Image (cartoon, rainbow, N blue to C red):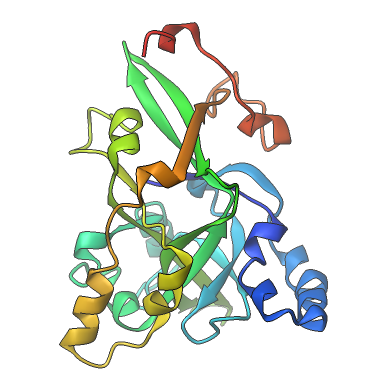
Length: 255
């Protein structure tokens, strides 16, 4: 799964920066960045933070979006609250089937850039958080789905997204061992050469197959991981830089 992430403005602008349009970057920083919750050293999707995403309609210019996809058919805020926490992640294997995701899978795919993500390891009734990042410390491009929802009471438009997940690689198999889940999961990370393919429009079944072929685990040799301080409960120090720094647990030294 992917409920906890770390990201900053530099990571979020990594795609836009490839165009080397300094004026555009300046405008994003001035107009969009203040609308987000950046920088994020740690946040959980259950707090529904606002981030920058790159959509298939705007592949190089980011949009502000709230984590937790709200399908267009949601009737009101009551139904929104009922569904919001259930759509933080979209299981990649079924995005073209599930009612909450299938329209977005067909027409509204996006990219989300993060510095890293957190997963919990279970041992003897306790959980130990790990921070997973790219070994070269470059941002990770996550595959996502997006949707727009209009509040029928106020007319306000809400742009939302979900992070697509896939089967966990060997590294995540060791870390993400939640006994309540069937096998390890991880966010769908796309190498740079495949990012645009995720955003390509779907026109026929062959295009659906092309998207489905992208849904696979990221090579574990490209990723690094280490334990960090608690992300839950009284020991949680909050959204501060120190939260993603290495922290050792004596209980895990034998692993």
